[in-house]
Length: 312
Image (tube, rainbow, N blue to C red; front, side, top):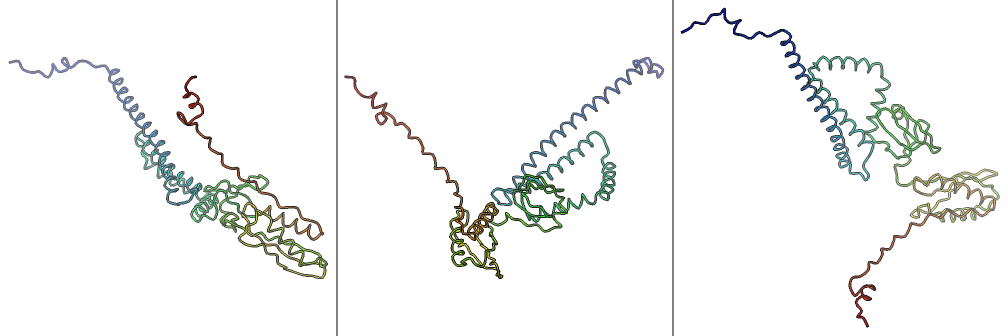
């Protein structure tokens, strides 16, 4: 039986060059990095897909919870964006952890930086707080006509920072939410109807009874004025040379400016002894299209009856 000699170990082990050891180590590290990058890429793709899917799911859930037809687009957009950003942030943290980055220190640095940025951007944060309060209290919605900060317009957009209005002369007005929330907000589209108060003055010499009757008749003939409440003509003031009155009628919110202008013109023409212009005619709804009669089958149709005739 031969004995084992330690001196023979270096001779038995194959010689490995240092370059081969370094190359093997680089290959192992490159393989691990490639695997980590591939997994991080998959996590990123899944995060982007999940953010969109969960955002759409949150919008649909908000639409079902509010029970409005149509649902509030502003609240849906806000909730959907919040869910999407949260999912993206969580996914980015998972990607960094997969790549071996210590997220604890990064989150600490981001927390300190966010505190400094928050102190520097107090005005912007006040707009965010006001935007959250507007979204929670819902004093107006997209599409409503509002008056605030001395501006009147239709709400076209609402986010966490600003409210976008479009005026009647097609101007874009962007107002910070802090100014909107800190000012008086008049929503002119909230209720289904609005009252028109057309104030007029006529000379004292005009026959008041005939004038009031003619003005009531003219107002009642306007199809834009709601017929469930009769037009009211009230005398609100009187002086030596003139009489002041007001025509009060109810109409839809979008017809309010036109009805106001029409009644003021009619009151002025009646005071001058002229016949007021006739009220505008509303467009008649298009009649439903009649369905085309389908040809019968066999002997009931004309062609079938011709074909079914026996030859002479």
